[in-house]
Image (cartoon, rainbow, N blue to C red; front, side):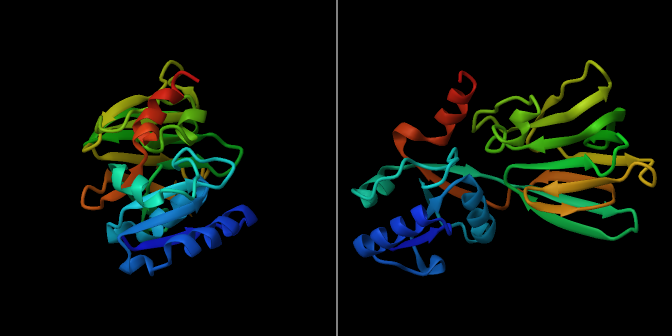
Length: 251
């Protein structure tokens, strides 16, 4: 099995990188059977974005402070662990954003696509599902669409639901909503198309963010699941991502 090791810049990750290369060798990621990522969730997301179009299986080892997407670290029996690992297929979200100047931009998100107010003025956003208006004017700090893999990240901090993998649903979660006062979000099918239209964007500017890619001053955003892109994440049988997402709801 040809392994490609990628490590964050921390001393902890770099030390482990050298140890693992000595034990298992090193290959180019595009020529490897499996990529082994050393770091935390942030570095894992960076690597997944970089190689998501290659469909190379990825096995993460926790070397950072946060590692929800990572397996426990150990340098022994790595090949056996990878062979026995459970594969989880993740699909990113495709964001199509239109700026107030008419320019369009696209980006992919593994965790979530979020809209946020840019000034002290609250955002006014219309929410549409499959072309039908569901909320004419959401008033608040913003709104997001989160994947199951991203449901324990920003979505959870905004009081959104934790979604088990394999459920083929997305979380539609408001961020500090003021109106409608009783609305706390929705669960929607993963194949649904979500459209956000920014109202009064000249007075109430809004930015759109797909994971770490931000586009400012947007007038409309369309979000769809990119079913044609498959991210193949590998997890130890006793520590797979689905179990972690379930356990997160009881911690």
